[in-house]
Image (tube, rainbow, N blue to C red; front, side, top):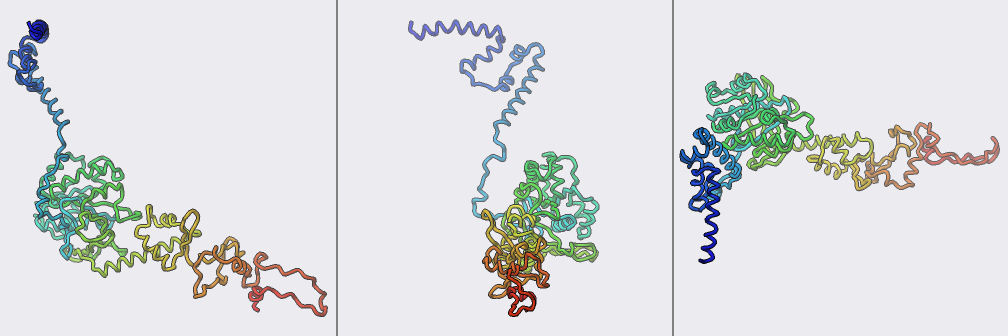
Length: 513
């Protein structure tokens, strides 16, 4: 007998013994089911497949007297377990690689702004992405938004309006004032006032309706409704963006309306978390009313649209440029509007006017500051935080033109001052006390005319000493301002040959000769 035969002879009794123990523990039916897998005759099954393949005899042997109910329950548990395992191991739909064939064929054109056309045919907002505009309270945000709604309804499109602020009666009245037919409002204007938190199924159902325009009025209330948070939280804003993007995926132009405060440091951008602006993939605007006031009932009003962000680049404008002028005429039975293209000359004039206003703000801030002003102090006075932004070029022009003087300070700081103030010594060195009354002083003149534009620290000591010896023109000079006459023997009155001492030249001039 060979070695392998001896091994098999010894192993078979042990295997038979183990099978007998297994049969006594789980029953003959279970052993018969397991043997094909143990011997490799059948491939391994999942628990669900095993349960579904049991014969009635095997199921009764495994589950006992009430085997039918217990067997069905076991199958349901196995199905739930496999479903959870499948979800855990499956690749999320958004993480699957996209088919880029349609973009590689050469005929693809990036989306262009086509919603709310100017009088030259250029649209202001992009379809298929999220757009935004913001303004201060009372500017006319809803009036402007409903003009966009009226345009889309007039084109035969469907509009979804998610309103967290206004009254449905006012919204309907405005649309009627714009001349929108009653049937168009009834059939294609879907007005919703959300209160409960939306479910994913509700959002998907709205997105599947194929609206051309979705308006969300306003952002802060929508974020609170969707996430329970606020617009200052980056996490809440990020979750809110994932909600509103569902509408854009269906091809709709999503337009959200936001507030800014009147004292906002940078009104060009919406308030709150920076994630808000980052999530807008279309156009973002600042809606402004002129100082004379925006649209009023029974009059002709004007609102301007200034570009803050153009993610697609289809507008051909730079940040902070005027994109359109919204002229609204409510003098008749219906509200008429025109979205005008700003002329180049108008753009230049507006930029010049804005620069002049910034010049005034800078000069006023430096003038009102106590002493030379650091750039950081100027930023704080102007309500800016990180840098001078649009004020930077204006400040450079003021320094270059000599209307401001910039001198080096301690630790590399740069100090700003007005030219007049830069030539004056400290008031104490003039003997004028704390008030520094310089109204009647004769100031040193620049050789070419005008006041010399340099800091008083640069004046030669001899010149400074001459300036500090000037008495007050009235002759009532203080002891600290007038030089003491030299002490000399005083001859008796009437003595022959007496000549009074010669006063200093500055004193002679002050006394009139």
